[in-house]
Image 1 (tube, rainbow, N blue to C red):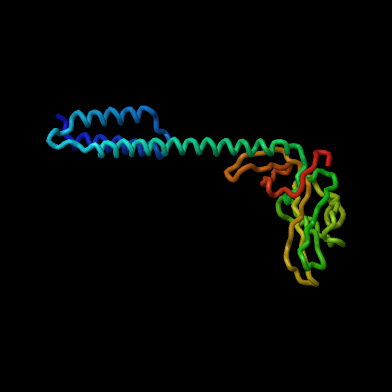
Image 2 (image 1 turned 60 degrees about the vertical axis):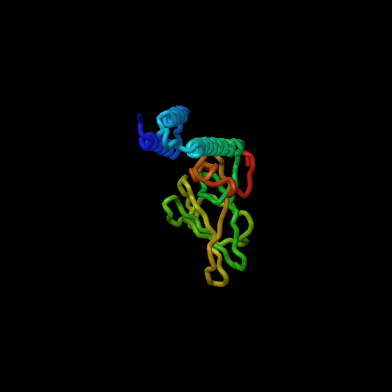
Length: 224
């Protein structure tokens, strides 16, 4: 006759194995059937002089059932998260090919670029600063009105044409001769792709920059 302690140990092993499966999210239906077979074997081979209480059977069954339900819940949540991600991408799929106004590097290819500076409150002088993809400053120019759109022709401070590539812009804000801070400069860029990332949907621009949909200040058709 198999000892009660041996069967209990086997049952504990089965439960532990199920717990391990639960952590990895790979619990399969056969595990539950195996547990029932072991539970039945335990009942058949228990010591008749010291039978196991029915409440203990119920606790063992409840424990395994709880683990099984938790794994199924986790699987469902994972599926829902994946569906939400796909849903988010579908929501912004119509933006592909459109132009989004964002604070990101500009893909310059020879055509003038319209910039939208955002001066800080209290600034009485603003300078537009342009840098190339390597971070080298290529142009610095004072703006007569810091809040109006500015057309950048793609030239350096001396008026010489710059090569095609990605350029970044920022606004230096002064009060008198004192620099009080830098602020953003936005421009329109074409959305070339919508990509799912760990942080949610991301818009990939023609410059290769990645921005969140929430960072878009305005949206317009491909023709501008």
